[in-house]
Length: 260
Ligand code: ADP
Ligand code: MG
Image (tube, rainbow, N blue to C red; front, side):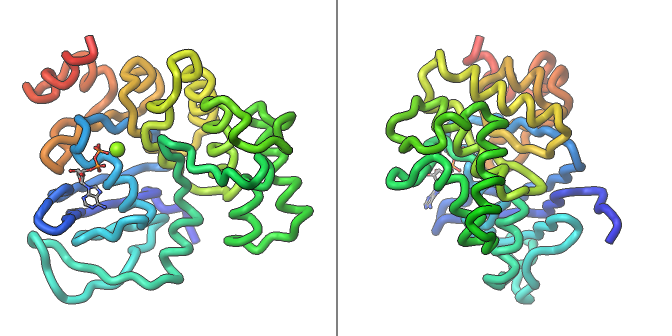
């Protein structure tokens, strides 16, 4: 199979929670190696968007293509003018393997050591043998500078270290794209840098990443593209210089002013 030109392609994505219409028609093409920073006010739907991309939330309507393959089949129904899809468990498992996610709250298993946390998905999802999973986990921990903490429980680590373990855990699954949902928002300020530094290194390796963040300085240097979410759509998007330094729309300007 030839390499698809887009890692992710979204058309007309809608997400409703009951009467709450959170995503109102998102279109997005993510090319291999792109680093997209997603900005927006609290409650604007940034997490919901990422969660739809790895199907922790089911889209209400619209099409998502991952690595050139449409996820789901049309039901024939329409919502908001967009096709309503249905999904099989098997294909959702495949998607979740190729789309890795790192959360604000780390979500490590407290009763497992660091290396067990990183091995877990390899064992249960990929069915890898213990030795192979252990070796791979140690390699990923080494990359984030935490090989020496392999046998410690997460509760003994700083927030920054826990988040680096969570990144190693995501990387161990060898995803094609990585989603970061405010990975530094719950960290003390002095621990933010070590996590951003790991994310920056992943960018230099040419990995495809979507990052929800309020670290505008980091987004400016890191992202190949910035999108600003408001009212359930991409209100403004473009190169970091354009969106962050010369926003065209008033709403974007007002949002950015809060950070100065
Ligand atoms: P953001 O990440 O931009 O802060 P979210 O995507 O978390 O925003 O949430 C967008 C809106 O959707 C919010 O109003 C939130 O309360 C609502 N929401 C998110 N998840 C759920 C859910 N599982 N059930 C009901 N409402 C939800
Ligand atoms: Mg969020």
